[in-house]
Image (cartoon, rainbow, N blue to C red; front, top):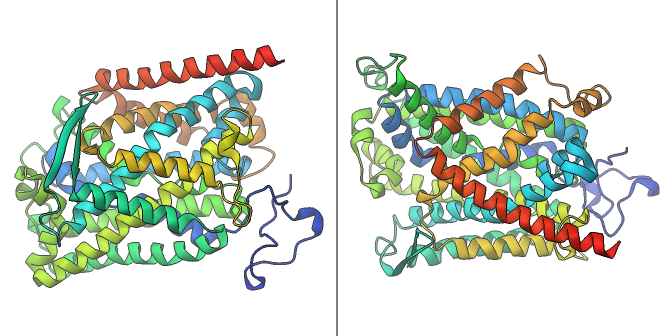
Length: 487
């Protein structure tokens, strides 16, 4: 199988000349994403607004600065899982990532087709909610300058989930609209945009780290409470909750895999982007959190139940060190990071319904490419439209459910697939090969299972996942029967 590293529609300074036989046709995606841009894409997807607002949450659930352990465990889990993504991504460098992996490894005409459909099905629900959380994070940070934006116009409850319409809701919708407009261009133009966004997000983390280190108080940072590392039930429950939050903050290291058909030289680009992003972001997260704990007492963060104050923990941090102007600057940078994550999420997720449609496993409408830009415009606009509607939800109540759903429908199925005989044969032939196989796979699966069963609301969240599974199974069954009648 040949994977050309560039595309004839790119500018001459961005691509080598390809033989005519290797040039993509007008009905294919373009390979225009470089290694540097792929790395930047993963980084901006991982960071977003999450790590800037979840430090108080992890400190609270773990009961002290031992919350750093939650970040370390989350980084190790991401590394083990990143090795799986690197193997599968180089073995099957196609659009859709997990969709393709589940299809090939579980059987293209048997379980694999059903599993890949269910994965794409749940994505129509979970992806817009995930993207909307970034939009809402952006709107909440912008409200630092617009204190009346959180004034509620209307509020209700939809299926037990709070719904609100406010100025922040409109700002969140505007953020989604901006992301759609920016993404409505070729992968080569996106390649350039990603580089600058990745640089801006990385510099935001570095700025916070430098500010903290230059005012660091080791006694404050490592003021562990009595019995902090006593290995009892409360410790493991706190660790599980902390790992769930940190896992959510780390997710995104695999985004490049969804764009497998659009990266140059996927055999080199995919593992470098996946593992490189985990290394860079993991290091920055750890340094950032230690730096903040060295300035803000952990007791203050853990006891602060004001959601507004928690949202602006980093602004409080900078204001305490340098004053209100510095706080305003960091708020702008974090808002930009949130908007960048919306951009990255929508870019990656839009390729999954497209891949399913091209495979005949989803309505063909999702598989249409833009005539000029060669982007899956219908898939992009559909996910963007659903995200706009999801901006009315208060997503804090559903984030943990989304994590559980994603673990079940993606990480566990995919990790198990990496142990199947078909992949054991395939990995000998091509692509990246993880060291110490299959140990990283087993450790990743064990970590995700631990997060699931340590959840206090595990069975309630499982019911939600079960409803999504039941609805998807019914739709798949109807489609299967219709196709059988046609044949």
